[in-house]
Image (cartoon, rainbow, N blue to C red; front, side, top):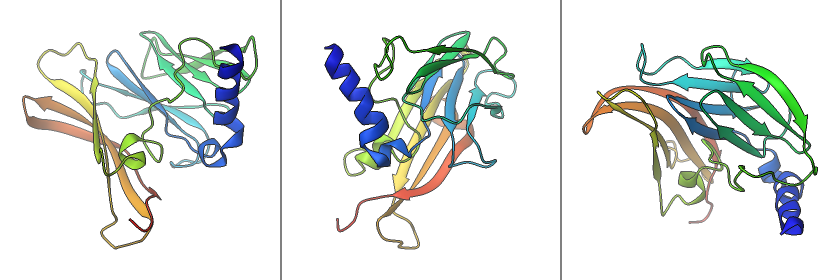
Length: 203
């Protein structure tokens, strides 16, 4: 099992260049959505973003934290911190104040290349590695419930992909947004990612 775990993480970080060049991983915590981008967003650089839900406003502006430049292999959320997995270490972000996230700890992996407990092999993704992009014909849209203390509304992350309206071949337009809902009605929403990514060819 140990050898297999090392192999899985090594393949994830090294052997597949298309995955190693990707970003947009996210996780869901209580009353917030966290995600990271290194090259798909403006300003340039590697940043972590926190969007709070259920407060005032119901969907906050993303709080942004500049973090070291590394390939993310996993991301986990908890009530007071989140962890980002790199190839050799784990970066801990304190979110006791979600509007002002802070990098507070960097600890080396006990076994470099081994995925620690708590990190899934396929971390959820907002962009080119999202389910609506990877499996467009089976799931052109993905809806992810967000855990929130606000009982007057529900919140969800929606990721959608579609063929470009201008007919550009071999590409998909992907949009990720957070929605505030009351029943089936949309109360408010905030877009967190929009991009054109590699799509299917000859299909």
